[in-house]
Length: 76
Image (cartoon, rainbow, N blue to C red):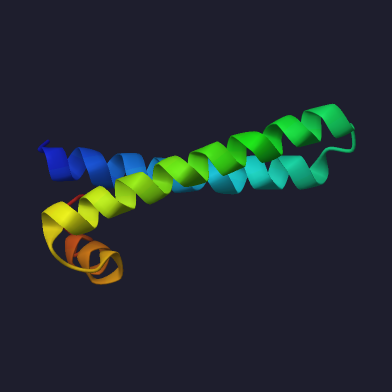
C-alpha cells in the first residue's frame, strides 16, 4: 500500500466517522452526549478536508474522478 492508498483509505474512513458522529448527535437526546458527538463530527470533517486536499495535491485530479477511476474492480 502506497501513500496515496493510505490517504484514500483514511479519507473514506474519516468521512464515514463524520456520518456516524452526526447520526449519533441527532439520535441521542441527552444534550451533553449529543454535543460531544457533534464536536467529534466537526473535528473529523476538518481532518477529512485536509486528507482530501492532500489527495487532490498528490493525485493531480478532482476527487470525484479520482475515486471513480480507482474503483474499477482492482480490489481497492
